[in-house]
Length: 362
Image (cartoon, rainbow, N blue to C red; front, top):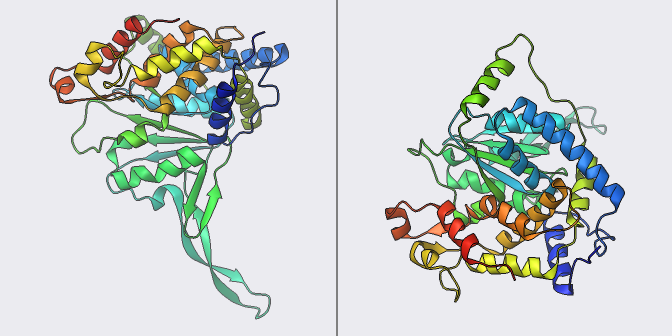
């Protein structure tokens, strides 16, 4: 089996691991073992089956959610109401037996409603036999394994920013203390693209913290019939437990150990650089319509989700096809259009199409 690559590649992997609170695996230089791959595939397939059985007609969404899950990253799901975004996230927490918390974002939501606050409480005092008052920290809903930020763009930027430290550092600072969040920790946010009145679009810095942005499309006619059959019966469907948090952390470590050849990493770098309009080999469409391109986090997301996709496809190493497949959910929220792009109704999807056509693998 091929090695992961040069020292630069190892440094990138170690940096990604440290940002997500994991220790680099000792076997990262030789890749995961066959038993590791078998374990990963067994749990991943059972998890995908459980999710697809309850969230009907969204197989692509389920697969992309698993890419982010096993890569240890956060997800932004965008789609009109009623497509099962909240159901998908709740089902995921049931199938993984993880602590789940839902935060309904509204304009009057405050940061303390998310991270928690310090309150005054009474505590028995053995010296006096009475009670004494102390300051006690009351954790907020962010102290869970899976946090659903429902309609995240309905809260003010001040409240949205309460998630930033947790998403990046896996810690929360309140008062004079910094508290670690439970592991694993995922923020799965939803937003409605139709009702934009009274909303606060997420700033680029916060969008960049989401590993993937997943578009949830309207189901087809055949899927709508399946939805009737599965939801309008007497019995309600519930996901069976597939794994716990400790097993999930092991799967994330296995995925990070998948080797990436040097030419694959070079293709990912060229693809990322091509999103920037000031680069030499940038496609003309990007020069015309893009204001800012993807950050180095986008490069990390391309590599990590490609590793997971390779495993889900039954392969031991990353291919160019893996990078092409994950480019859309990785880059669509990291490409910022300029005025001309917005005026001409250009979509980031069409720009990614142009990138994949013009950036060649070497």
